[in-house]
Amino acid sequence: MYRVARLDGMSVLFVAGLFAVLAALAGDFVGAIVGLLVAGAGALELHGAALLKQGETRGVNWLVGSQLSLLVTILVYCVVRWFHFELPPIPADMKPLLQNAADQLDVPVETYLRLLYHIVLWAVALVSIIYQGGMALYYLRRRGAIIRALAS
Image (cartoon, rainbow, N blue to C red; front, side, top):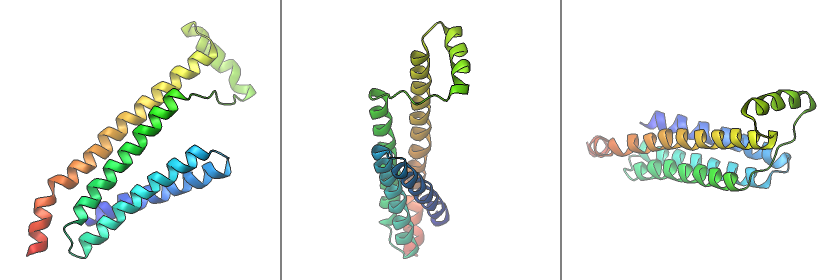
């Protein structure tokens, strides 16, 4: 479990940290803050993995907590973005394509983009619930085995 937690924690920390920096450079304050919160969840997972390696059973609590904090961060981000939709700048060469797709649904381009945006937010939320929830359950289900292994 140590290897899984370390790999997952490092991945989350690195990717989220990179996106936080890119968001900050682009002037996206909310994106930078969310990136830092997600990176923090990765750091929590790495701390839990380090505790396990040192023989501390409380490391499992850190692993579960990291997944739950990451899940809450992602879900809150999705809710905030759902209610604060901002039409992105559309490149000129994409406008005909978007207009064609919107025309097929008989809706304005802005409505079409809002629909796509909401579908992506739902997908992100669903994948996060499945993955982060699954990881939290994975860590919880192995708690007993970890305690027994560390006690012996």
